[in-house]
Length: 182
Image (cartoon, rainbow, N blue to C red; front, side):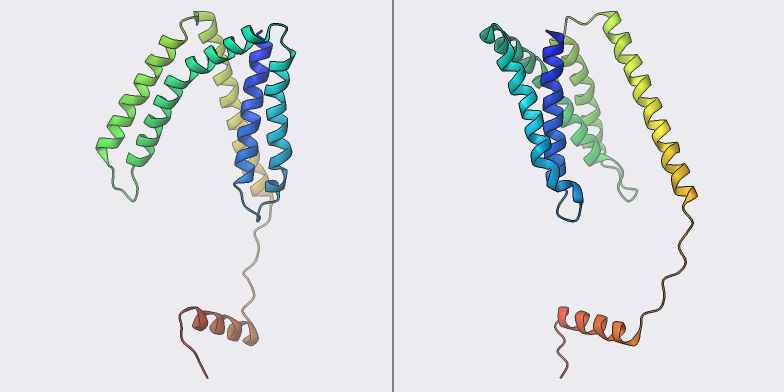
């Protein structure tokens, strides 16, 4: 049963990746892969629900899981939104949304433990070990990117524009600002 729920959540997150890739726009090459990624995620969810022997019980358990997920998730999401909107921008801090956001985030933790009362100390320790693993992954990724970027030689200064390129830029700018030359 745990594997079934893991498959459903995996499908959910794969669908989110597909949606994110779809929003990248045509300049990125990944946006053309969003349909297959989204469909794979959807198939993970549908195949899990169709494989169950007692589908009504399985769907009921899944709905209970979603109902336990939604209150703390949306509360936390609202808190994170408020914290980000109140965070310092150009050295200006907006304290009301910042403080309210942190209070709501703390309340979302309360809701998480209230709706997930089946958690034990062992579950929390496993979660903490997962966080440690994720932290090591981010640190390793950071140093890997830094290593690769330090190995790439810096590019020299760009060559100066030719006269024809300068004329083209001047025409484009004058056209865009509405100055016609004749």
